[in-house]
Image 1: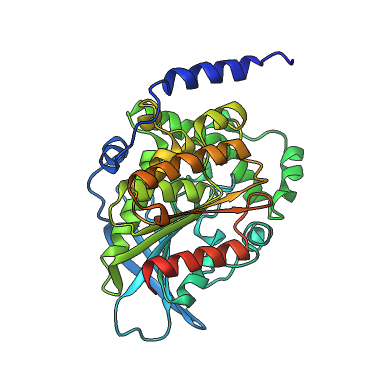
Image 2: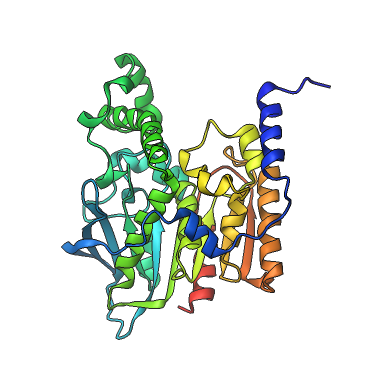
Length: 374
């Protein structure tokens, strides 16, 4: 028998202490109360800055303020064909990827097309498809907002503290091949990865988590979407992969306006996460407002039961263990069983690594169509 590591023994001790009370149902009101950074979620000074048409899709560049930092830039897509009625809508949430130079561009094509430095990520992770544009082609109004730290919401390089200054240039040259992009982008992403620790500490010092702050920004984006005359407020969903899946769980848990949620490549139990995957994950996965009360990600995902939920699990995901995914699936299932709504929770298990490829996207689109009655 191998000797138990210091890390795993500490992790087990903390998990046992925190979860010793057994199963307790988390209610949405509790989740919102714990994670509600601000109840004022109306976007400030929203405006449409530009519009364009790309085949079957009309695009709008939207901007608004969330109350701090630069204006959020979001893209909105909808079918070019006249609807004559309101349409179902989707908030599409970009992923983390340890890549902060761009945000919405990872999953959506704007008027300038796909930035060259994102070509590799788009192909490897999304099967080459801008899935937000595809959802619009299928008949949805789709909003893709940047969020704190990414894209239009990223920190200017000159504001990053000198304490996280880059290592020697040759290391940055090595990292350039990571996404096939220019040195400037790789350099920024490396600095921004270190800067996330500082932002998380700032949030904690103010009594809020990074998770709660980003959930607030996503509720502001949702509020903008709900304000539009072309959106059916009763048929709004959210979707995201990885860090975007984390954001989808948070948005679904803290807003009653989400009719259905799709969470891709982001579900596990804290016990398994803490044992093997802490170092590889963002601060977004560790909201102390919930964990200090003994709740877990499956609790956040299940607290909206019986609201429709799809979770897509990846059996060879390098970021989550199979045991953690199974534990998460089991706990979510229990929420929906207790709500008498087992058919409202769909779990799909795919072989292979961390991704949201065309097969998975098509399965997610079919789920949304069935729940939003496209």
